[in-house]
Length: 467
Image (cartoon, rainbow, N blue to C red; front, top):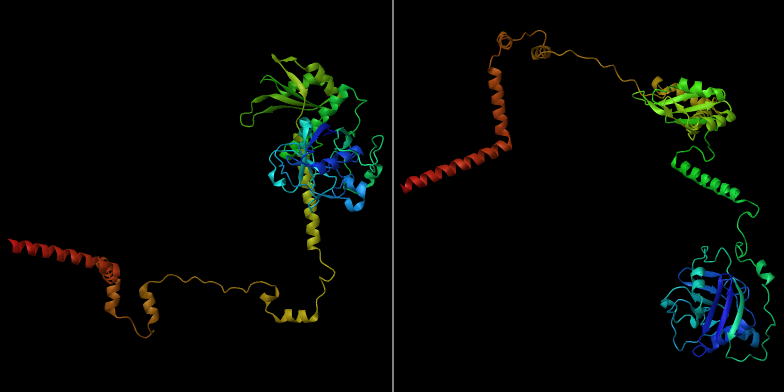
């Protein structure tokens, strides 16, 4: 009462519950005997849930029971078996798929997790995976698309019935050998093409040596690092490379000058530039320099011959420069030039007069002439000129309000002309006192003081009477 399935991921053995589920077990055993499942895809694989197969079309909408082979199309499905109740408790449980009407055909699934209770009372459990824990782990980790179909096809290759307690019907035709995959299956429109189980990805690397493979992997890694540095803003472009004719010299003596390095390295070829990097504030040497050669070959010769050479009692180190500072400057200059050119072209287009810009109707011209001058130029009306009046004394203002024939009284003029002395202080204090009397705050303050004073007098009177 068991069946062996050979798949692209390995082999599994399924034990059937022939006593509890006789119709489901009979259907599954006879379909395996006629090799109905050969070439079927696992078209629905959901991680930690199920792996579904049994549909020769690979769409999840086909498949028929063994009873269709025996009794015709009206027996494509059969009623599901409800009793006894068997739950989806353990990982590797094998169950028939419900078609939505409480019937089963040929599709079945294998659970990939424990305690999937919500599948109970919907699908019928008829077996369990007895051997194949590793296979369950493999199919649980396959990559699938949003429709839960694996990117790399997982197929059933062969089905072998190990033990069958049910006799074969007389009308059942059993093929002598296992058939090959159906060629019509590849012609079906079931979505985008998938990767076959034996298909290799990428170019064939059989003709490459170990060194060439290592070099290719190093190039891929360098490309990945360049993309990362571009995203971080350290490189202007992915294809930016450091110059091949520039040497980086470090571990220099602080007293070594650029002229000394140029004299020493000039015997390998013409030098375009030689610069010792110095501190911006102090001007002290940072003990490293960049030397640019005219030719790449001269730079390579200097690299091989000048490394670990003693200069000014210091053993220097020479390497090819990895700096892209000049590339950054070139990239920024080019970007700025492009921005200026784009802005100039946009500005010229913006201020360029259109074909009807100089045409003006007579009516609009007449309206423009009738407007005031300040409206013709679309400006604000001119504001009247502001004149500053000199500050005048109070006496002068009073004289200005009086009639010209009357003259001011002598006493008032004399009183105003005389020095005021301390009278203005007294008048100010009087004005403050009058203001304080009129304010509501001063009234409250007086009430409080009055209440305190009356209370003090009342207590003194009581004490006097007591005495």
